[in-house]
Length: 223
Image: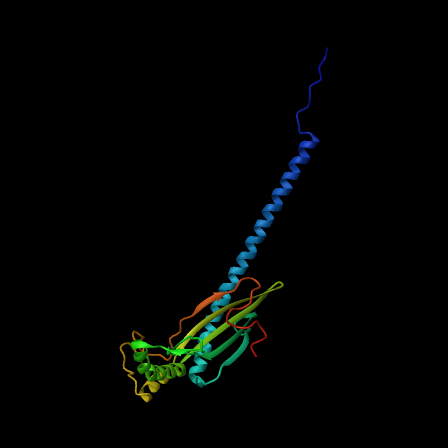
């Protein structure tokens, strides 16, 4: 009795299962690669935006030193087409820094003067503190620069904030108010480096995707 030998190979069902597993695996791999590309582009955009914001802060600071600080808030805007980044826009806001003077404590009648020996000492220092506050408010400015760009349906932005000090205004204000202006390290500021008009301290604060700015209004409202 003769026996038929079965040919070696895969059945149709085995081939279909293998193709289904391969298709699912390729889909997952492509999705992972797509997310990686998006994250890389986001990181590149945030890096460029942060560098542009830092450079624009220096431009605004130079403009303030040339034209004067002024007494009112300034709002500026523009784009980076000349720098080779036409997709990025910027908006800047310059304002005086308000320095509160401690002198009262919250009470039922809208506030009451601090009592006791501490209150008496604070009351005697209030005129000097008010003079210091006025001088520093005239000499210090806060610069906030916001760089904006679009990624698909989302509006992205990076905000950088710094504070600059005019040493000339600080020196003149302290001298005019009869306050000591020769403190170690600089003009009325212990440890401050000598030379220059400002002392910037930028701190970038990137925003989440599609989020609004915490310190400045959304694009198009700084007018």
